[in-house]
Length: 258
Length: 268
Image (tube, rainbow over all chains, first blue to last red; front, side, top):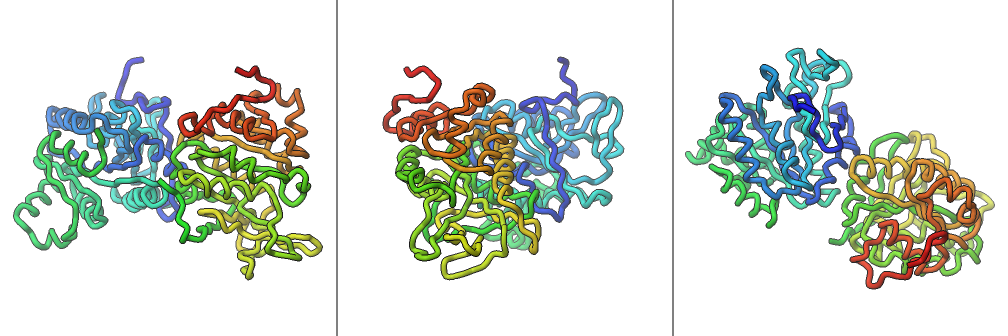
């Protein structure tokens, strides 16, 4: 079968979709999908790829592949995929699928807020907005968070659900480590970094990735006291510049083991 | 890693039929092995002879178990002397759990009457004329009470239906394996055996345990129709051999692999 940006490459040849209202309790079905990972550790990837050219994006994927070699935990991010001119327009949300595909025992999941009406386009392709953005077919499962059947949400609409899921995995599912990696990104990514830092999870910021992530790194390097207060003075922040450094932090914080 | 904390009384979750139970299901997954064993069978109507040696039989058979346990979540106390526990299948999983610190446990209780707190604990069922009172079993990590609403209860079948739902979640979304162990039992147990076998999920019937489990254990047509329904004799070696074969026990966790004594199969 020829692989296109629309081809489902998730394990079992299917992506399980769970839809929840933002005000509902967390769905057990989705929470259980996270426990499939061989090692009970969960890393959330936050960010975007604005301002990056195709070479930068390919290099980003290669960096994560190198840093995560041997990873057997849960890796997850936003649950979307962008397509441009019939090709994958690589985003951070494509990273978990690549990591899981290359590392047996690892599981890739995603969450996305329903910001617009779900619709079918073309050959009955499910898209999440009128511009044809789709759900990522590399992931084992995607949680769509909605504001009731009629309401729309902003792009931060899934944050509460994913942070609660992470906490539930740790508190009830015996997950040993939770963390966040930030690459590039805008306002929502900044919020995610602050929230994760306040929970004292390891937060890995990739220097040179651009926008919100670099802005926070700049602030930390300039010893911006307001920012340091906002993150929490006892936050576990790691600034990395290359895949080797990221790998070392993943080892030190328990996400990777030899 | 131990899933037990002696200082904590069971967490009590109350849910409507059909509602999601994320915390309880995640807590089950804290077990080391991805294998859930559901216990069903006789309680109040089990004869003294059928209950003879019940605890030691399963305690020894499950030595080394590191999966999750699902059971009825209750304990029956003699009304005339409440220090006497009435033997029943719901006494078994807590014993196994206490002996095997890497296992996890969840009791499922259908709310059949208004819950009441008494000196005996939380009373689930107390019928006029009955010789025993049913309370929430104190030896479990967590307990899930199923109700229709704050005012309306559910019938006793809600217990096994909820267990089927949880087992389905674990199998479908978390890639777990499962086993229904059936000892003795009556009409509701029969429905659970049939519902489990017809889904193609493994069942272990204990031959010699009496009543419905024994009846199906000797029903050749039934066993032929459902090849994942296994039979073990009422002995430690036989049950242990079946648990190893089915995968509920792992060879690496047991000190010696017993001689397999599964009815209808050639012995090695």
